[in-house]
Image (cartoon, rainbow, N blue to C red; front, top):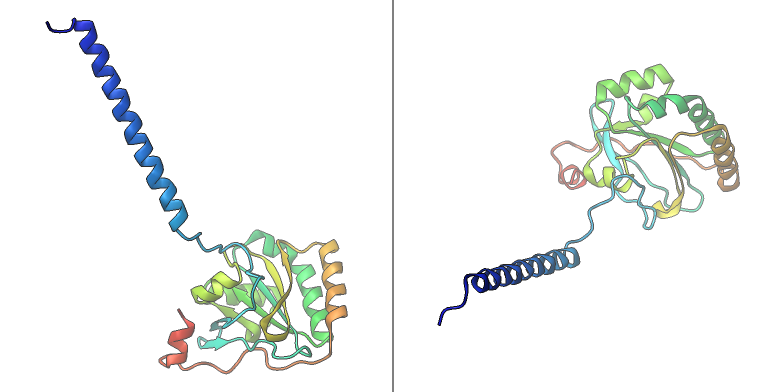
Length: 213
């Protein structure tokens, strides 16, 4: 004796529901496995201050590839300014940046400017804002882009002995943060200074190829 038509429909609906639940569980299991096994994406919007900086480099406005000499003792300090020529926040903070840069140099800090823009746009920006072109690098390799969080500018980074990140000021400088930075520079100053950027690295050398990775 065959089941009534209503029974067949009910059985079919139950089987469809069971199949849908099975598929959903399989999908959830796969997604959970992917979340556990996939490493987090690199954060390009923040300075990686949990470990010392290494191999900070870029192209100078002379068109040559340069490496920034990092401090190698407690008597050396470096101040990195990151910016972009088209960044409105960077334009607005310029009066405060000039004040911080001048103060840093008087106290013996080296200053380096790293732009996420191209050479010509950056050159025009530097000339308009009195930023020393010989202290400016552009087109940083991804390792530098990542370490300095160049996905978000402007940022100010204080670097100490062996590349240790001693302070980070993210976003546009204001009168309040400029006062705080100036106080920090005074407390950490030693009066020591050295070359801003190292001599150009030969374009075809193994060192240049490794640093561009």
